[in-house]
Amino acid sequence: MKGSTYRRCSCRDPKTGKELGTSCPKRNSRNHCTYSVRQELSPREDGSRRSFARGGYGSLKAAQAALDHVRALLGLADSDDPEGTELIAEMLAEVSRERSPLPEVEETRRRLNSGQDLIGSLTVAEWLDRWLTGKRIRKSGLNRYETDIRVHLKPRIGNRRLDRLRVSHLSEMFTDIRDANAQLLEDNAQRRAAIDELATVPWKGTDNRARRKAMKAAIDEMPPFRRITGPATRQHVKATLRASLNDAIGQQIITFNPAAHVEIDPVRKPKALVWTDERVTKWEQTGEKPSPVMVWTPQQTGAFLDFVAEDRLYAMWHLIAFRGLRRGEACGQPWSETNLDTHSLTVSSQLVQDGWEIEASDPKTDSGYRVVALDDDTVDVLKGHRERQDKAREKWGTAWVDTGHVFTQEDGSWLHPGKVTDLFERLVAASGLPPIRLHDLRHGAATLMLAADIDIKIVSDTLGHSDTRITRDIYQSVLPQVGRSAAEATAKLVPLQRKAEAEKAARKAAKKEKAKNAGKAKCGKPKDKAKAQAKAGKKAKRRKPKK
Image 1 (cartoon, helix red, strand yellow):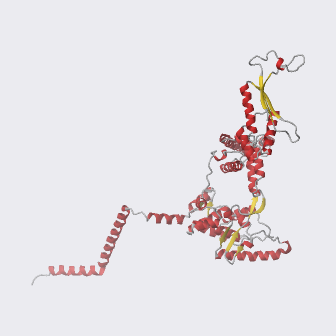
Image 2 (cartoon, one colour):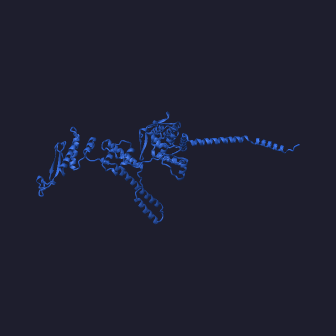
Image 3 (cartoon, helix red, strand yellow):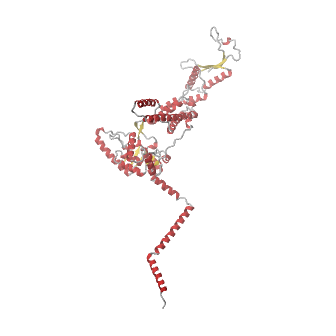
């Protein structure tokens, strides 16, 4: 296809308004005219011609470089690729009309090969919307992604070009989030102080009522209480962006993922602590929990189960405490996957809470699908629960909702996981035991299995973990007596010389003491009395006068 560069004068006749062209008296001046380029493009579908034309170049060299750039773009499509040729021609025609810069050759090559639009630039917000639309995951996970995108990503980096997103941009975003946290804490503190001050103002009296009214109006003008974006949420925002950008790399839209390299504050997961006597005493005095994750001792677990023995959902508390099912797994466990004859149940479904809505879902991971062995006592508890459920079914008659679940509401309908948590917290408070969360019963089950010297792999499989490291890092909360036994066993493995000498001296002293006590036993009172009488007789003989 033809293409050329040419010199052009844009001066016009003041009378007619037409361009002077070659008749311009200044045309031969060195810096008077500019250079233009023109390149023929493939014709449109209707046969009409189209071309790329652009002027204003200050030198012939600059114009020729632009023409070479256009020809390089045209050369990206093979001669036997009419679709690619059409796409590039349409792109160049639009660039010419809009007078926009010529796109880079390599960037255009990448877009053409990956099937992307050659015209326009994809923003982060546009890509996130496209990525979220294509996700096929459960609703709760989708909503979490949507929240991260709507609240954090779009407002801060949504208008940036996707292919120009850098690590520095993400660092600025997370710095902005931390600054916003500081402002939220300050706003919350001011609102709390105003509310506390309002509580000190009496209700009676004209002046007091006017003051209260003014203070309430001021409080209404303040920003409402809001939660800060904590470390865990920031990590999730980063994970959301990283996942979306990985998919963009997979589709060859970008070649670098800045979210994989940005550094933010790490999340320190709280370690599970056991409610020892000392910690219970301090909790009773101050009301403070030593850690967000607390675990009952076997005695405390037994006390709770005894306290709730008559509760309608006792079997569920028992199952979670001993076998470590998650809340959603227990609520969604069907009788069809619970085989009491073989002492096992299969975890194959769960009830997931999204906001306050609940839905049935598969386990989150492949490791969530698992067979859990049941002990004799748990089997007996579940058999008793099934008998009571059968009686309730007969009582409700046609009003019974046949969900097929092991644990249900009184009418057989689904248990709401949120209501189960509320019930558990009320039962714990009524029992007088130190507080734990419902999920901490699962921690306790893992701790009990580890304390019983169960192999870590079996514990991990029972809990549905994908890796034994998760079990060790999160759930290995060692009970005091187990830790003490381990310490003693460890100490005995090290042969210390000073320790051996001390033990030898102790044995020698004990032997000497034993011999001394044995000598005292031989010198009893009867023998001492006879010896004294013999001694007295000898003295009497010495005093007797000679004949």
